[in-house]
Length: 86
Image (cartoon, rainbow, N blue to C red):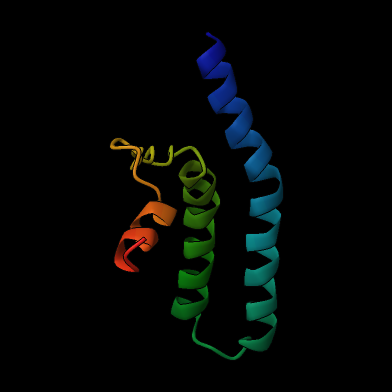
C-alpha cells in the first residue's frame, strides 16, 4: 500500500507543475499561430493532452542502478602510477 501511495503522490506532484507548463506553452504557441488551419491547432492541443498524461508518468520510471566498478579494488591513482612506472 505504501508503494501505491508513493507512486500516486509522485505522479500528482509532478503533474501539478508539469501540466500547467505544458498548457501555457501550447497557449503561447496558439497565440502566435492563430491563422493556422484548424487541423494543426487541433494537433497541438491533442499533443498537449497526451503530454499532460505521459510526462508525469515518465517521472515514475526508475533509473537503472549503476554497477560498482571497484570490484578489484583498483583505483585511478593506481592505474596512473602503473603507467608512469611507479
